[in-house]
Length: 536
Image (cartoon, rainbow, N blue to C red; front, side):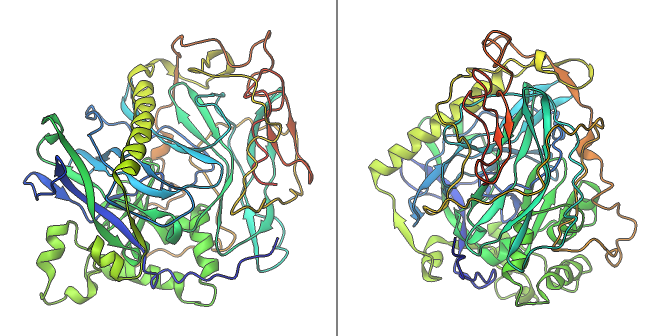
């Protein structure tokens, strides 16, 4: 495969991310009680921190509202397969209330579809179950027992060349239980990012998302920012919410954070030291202790700029210590900065869509038919999410590891026809790569979660930030390792995989240069025809 030589300068691209404001029956008036935020959670469908070991997210005592009526934005970015992904509620630790993470226009990864997350009520409170990009051919809601700890500590050999990227190890579930595939080196590309395989916690069990190629941040679409509602406008007949403001690409990259225990990136003003105590760390700090595929890709993309990573750190220190201006927290706060002293060091976060077009970003008008088609598809995604949210089982037993016998998938289907399930293509190119050093049948008895490995590109030594020596490191943060109850799944169908129908979650595990890594492969098991093969 020929590598693309496109170069993305992360602070110069004419890219924008959309904010929103409310509309009633097609009009777009400013309404009191709606606060457009210039900071908050990044929609999971745009980007989500990769976790080697997944644990339940932090519980919230307050019940989340039902999803609001939301319409796709009136304009969308150009792309091969741009779809509207609906928004959802997330917890704001400052307000002690829920904020709306607005939907987004997303240029979809090849052969992937979005499975939306949801809030599940547990004995400890409401926990967010993360969404993920599932393989297009795989049925929804297939569950496996909790995977063993992923102990990958990064590569043990030097990269073959300067265009190599490390793919971390992963566990795969088959006939004999979990088997481990070691990490390996593969090609790196300017115009794509490899998202490693990972598991997602849910009250029904763990779901597996195989690795896949995705676009760099600058080519993913338009990300709509959170909004806070002081009034429940969604109770008014005919009301809906539509985005119409945008945030600059540089504002996102220069002010990006990772939330431990929340499974989200955050952007904007999270510069108070108090956020470190809540598990919200700056992006560069997180990358020193955890593998982050997006950080690794951006650092490699900016390999011609030796000060790129150091600039991220110095900006953070400057804003924490007050020598640089903080990003505005809302659209109105940004407007009030105009003409004020010191405003020059505060990054501009919010732009109108007209300003986005003026910056060079190509936008296309969305026709009424396109809007209705996208809205219907989004409503189906929301409906599936709500079904899981409303039927999620509560914890009824003490902490313990889930087993195959306690997994009862909802609506699981058997007999997937494809024998190469999970093979990911990008722009018509297969992106196949042999996986040296793969290993079968390795066991791991530890169930400790929340640990990960250092990025091979970042180095392993980390010095404390000035004035922050008392803050625990990301490695020692234990919020993801909260109480881990086992759940009794409801009776929505038979086991996916049973003594009479085949092995649970597939019938085999295969690794090889010509066949890839299959997660499954047995008759009647997890998708029957194989679950995996994603990176070959």
